[in-house]
Length: 527
Ligand code: N01
Image 1 (tube, rainbow, N blue to C red):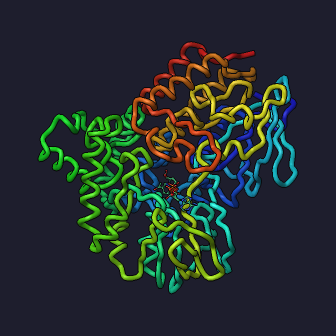
Image 2 (tube, rainbow, N blue to C red; image 1 turned 120 degrees about the vertical axis):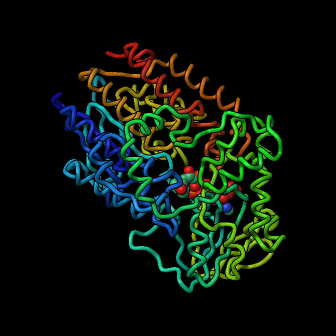
Image 3 (cartoon, helix red, strand yellow; image 1 turned 45 degrees about the horizontal axis):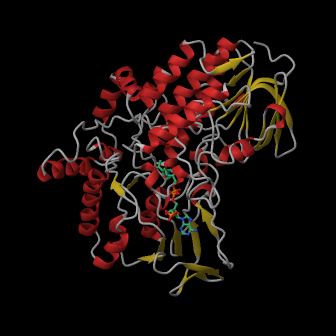
């Protein structure tokens, strides 16, 4: 299809896993696509999150593209869980391997996009460039807008957010470091920073559940087996609940004896990783079942942390395990046995202000040289709403989503024709192996564009309403809404409290999307 009166057929925003694959697929269809990327390189989340200890919590062989047999044969991962530099090398390799770079424009932040009827998206960049395309695809990631808490006072030393870590690294050796936040980023970075820092003070507002990764070198035998069975394993990932090979146990935690339950938890704790939540089928839907898993982790924390008072302060209590993203760590709890790690519990002594030389809580001043903000992201909607997106009749996405995101299948939002949102709110996205979800969305969008053959598509508002209701209804059947999590928008002051991802599972969701396409895009309007 020729670009016609627009500069490009498609503009893709973002050059992470999603944007790179989208570009590759569109090239295969003969479409003229341009990727606009804010960063100075490709990689998306893996370009920005370079903090010490940054590592994927999904196993490397599963957290990789499946679309090209050659690619998966050629690439060798070194560890069970890949560290950030290795994933970034992989994405750079992919960009070169498929010759994607000529169509990727780096250092280009999209600031606005508006629909110009009957069929053009007009896109503006921070550098003042104006581009147009018939279709717009966002590949902006779910966790790419950093949340900085804006504490009162001022600190004279350097401070860094984990998700905006300087590309040339930061030398923290011999420094007194404050780490604010104990989500996945804090929990991964604290033990690594503690190895070289003079002192680490951890400012914890909410204790989090974490399970051991049991990371290590990837065994050549396992890799060979995975590659030999690539097709079948990838099919299993695509049809599973979470996009992971986690072998979920179909039994209820309450239907077995204490001994059997303990053995199952222990086996999964020893194996390491997110599969712990698959110990029993009802951990995320039944509070009593959930408490058994939480109690098991509490015992592990008590057994690991030598100072009983510190151990008690590390016990997560206010939310069911798994209702906030489960953390996967290497040596997190044991780090509190080090003489150079101190826990500052913000529940008993909140942060009052930053001082020139440190952080003052209600209790005392903690002198530090560097502050690391591991304070998370304005998740899921943040990256989309950071762009001033305007659809039919100037409708602003910020206005439409004021009370929470509304989309059909997480793929399109009614009133914003020809705009596709890869892993948008209302799709499994962050509750799944992101690569499985990204590939599914990219394939669905590519097929849709091919079949549209230049026509305009929009979500039917009725189909959207029904989908939003379904997303909410399924979430209510689970324990997820019980937590003040970023899934709920609860970490950002003023953000509407709505459970944003689709919790029904990637297999069920994939079937639904395929069925919609097979029924001639049921629930979408074309003109
Ligand atoms: O962010 P978070 P993250 N004062 O929002 C605290 C993915 N990820 O960057 O819970 C003091 O989870 C906040 O406290 P509270 C993964 O999906 C993946 O760690 O709001 N503290 C919390 O402890 C993950 O879930 C990997 O009370 C403040 C922390 O900061 C997601 O990214 C690695 C505060 C933020 O935790 C986000 O993780 C890393 C304040 N004013 C991340 N404001 C992988 O392994 C916030 N906090 C792939």
